[in-house]
Length: 120
Image 1 (cartoon, helix red, strand yellow):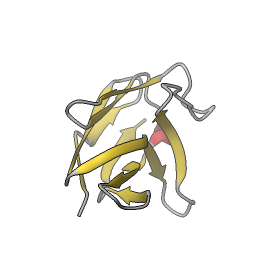
Image 2 (cartoon, rainbow, N blue to C red; image 1 turned 30 degrees about the vertical axis):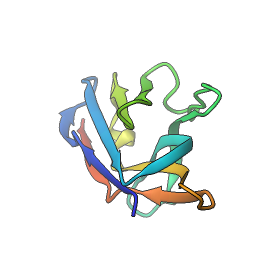
Image 3 (tube, rainbow, N blue to C red; image 1 turned 135 degrees about the horizontal axis):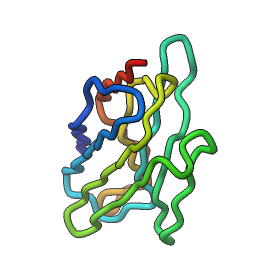
């Protein structure tokens, strides 16, 4: 099984920075996309930022210019640097991976989520 483990969430004041990390394990043969989604209370899960196999990095309009996603293919790790945080960034952040194990079809995998709370 592929497992994603997030770390780095917590409480931060508005305007401050916070960094999230995700480590993927489980004999991953290839990765198409890794990224971060988030879900605020009472809202649907939404994309925050991703890295695609071609190297493109789509960001949600709400985080452009403030969040930076980066990955290490060799280590199968993903990071999200969040700057100038706003109270509306408060959410559970989920690490996401679309990829496949050897001789398997691509699948979506999710981490358990990490809480980010931005106080005003």
